[in-house]
Image 1 (cartoon, rainbow, N blue to C red):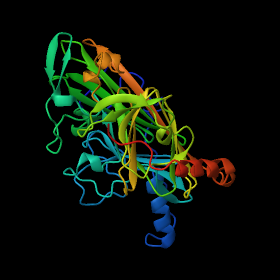
Image 2 (image 1 turned 90 degrees about the horizontal axis):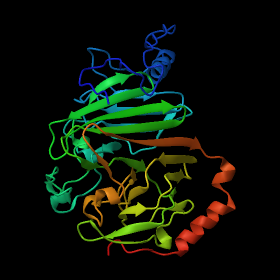
Image 3 (image 1 turned 30 degrees about the horizontal axis):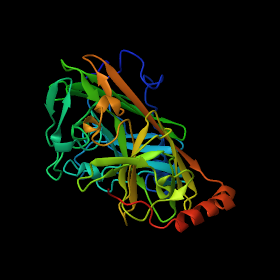
Image 4 (image 1 turned 30 degrees about the vertical axis):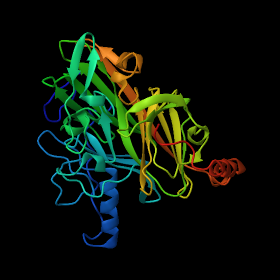
Length: 390
């Protein structure tokens, strides 16, 4: 994997977009008076169509970001979507919106204020690497070695989500609909790696590619995922069929694998549970859907992973659906990480995971169909469903 730490440059080999070397379009000359309403509308349209992008010696500033923000963002935009990315904030997303009749509707929970001092869990989405979620006791045994994993959050008693989400990334390349970020953690312990993170807009779809290369001397189990915070209202429904899940203890580590209970099978679009869910699900097809019936929007999620973590805090205006390639504490489950979805990488070997989020305006007939009404009725009749812990 070719990874650079420089400022913006064009890659020496092709990246996600074949048009990455295209120059930025020049703004059209305004014909209205500078302070007229028509000029203001034209300026807003121009800003949305041609957002500020990074150049070789300039920072990128997200459109609409507070003037007092001390974090530079990159904005990608097309006729359907807008995406704001903050490389310095773990390569995370601060905004992912659907463009609808001149307005922007949040798909991921929108970051209200971007700051270098903000909690990463206030972002709209961030990458998970070189592992997802918690590692029990901060250690595991692998290939005859006892491996210590340091705590990475003062508020967490266990190491969580790796270190990619807490590190500043660099911009490797960017254009109007694509940005590629890179991270060099070759001096990391116990994980030594280089990574690349690509965001691309393609019509109504956001695609994310997350790539990691082991730069350490010894082989290690690696795992990848993404952690989006999706917008939630009273009408939000989820479809994400899975065959099983891990029940957890007070520390949220898995203690027992069981078949998915009826209340949490999500075979078709069902309302999200009212109670807290914070579990890893297994036997996932890699496809899911979120429906916001009130807004007549739907989101299709695809990933080349077999697991997801679902987090539904009661009363919140968001929920988390995290496509991952391994369950919580996989390195300490029976058989170790490589028997539970993780990939053992020797020195120089790479792992790539891809995720897509496609937004669609729902047809009124589909939103009001008897099938959907029946699904909601069955979901309500199931009661509270499974216990949150073992």
